[in-house]
Image (cartoon, rainbow, N blue to C red; front, side, top):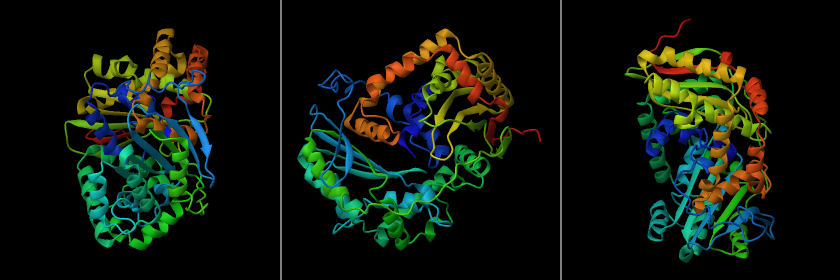
Length: 476
């Protein structure tokens, strides 16, 4: 999955603005299971530390992005920044957990957990000690559609960090002891998640809405499948994933372009050019308009609502984001936060967001709702969906959403790591390197007529599927 497919543009952060960041991340983690990381790009709220410092030296560009291809054919985008002596390299391969072998779900996630647990001549303990002693981060992550890696280091330890990254990518050990420990960690994490109602809602989302598609399977694996994964499974699977075809790289920090090129050639040029890619058909969302109950004890019901969304490549993407901001993506500025929380005190927070998965883009709502107010909340969500579908937004709502989406951009550039992630995201979306320079104009150009047209095309109140982990009894 492309990193922008996570570009919910403030949706989760704003929609749950009444919660702490830790609470937001936990609520998403409870159900997401292979969905993209929602805490990226324009919803990063840490501050403006880099927003002014990284104005491009040339032509007044917002960010001085330099695309390059190395002498050995490795492509990347690069931003030079010497404000701090830190280097970040972010990269992704376009093969994610959908590549898990059948019956061995969790294998790709196990690779992500194991790559920095020993590589080359270094055992897991030696690898981890070198990272700790030199303030180096080398870590990996897997979503349904992509496998990503990240190296972060200070300038003084760059050579050591690059050597570790190179070994992890090219020569992972997958030692039995280390893999067994990671399996145990994954299973412990899975058992913990299974104590949360959000996990059951996410499971139902996969099994009912994505039934019959590869998205039906758990990216985290299952307690019965994780023990079956072998060292040979990991080695064979990594050979499929780690290839240059579909590799996207972003480099940011205190190093020259020539240094960056040499590093990328050293780490990535030796990888195979390509591997066989699966033919995966788009998912057709199942159970439209249904209310699905997963019985769970508790004073609140965990609610997910889902309908078909749109891809990032769609020219109406930003118009949909404007609509979403006003539905439940704008925190206390949104309609559903006003009606469900402020006026009726049925929840602490409600959020909506667009998720652009490769094979099934969706539009979603999430909330924890008082059991006595679940039916009323469902009615209010449907009613607001229909209201915006039929009538669009007001001029004030349009202006507020535009201001937020435009003003949030500097928050995407508050660290070298955020910028390297942004560089990867833009490439995966097929955007030009100077896209940030005219992004604001695309948003400013949105009109009330555009909003009404897109709302009537996309919003489907009658097709919203509600998944409830709690005590509410839906009608047959």
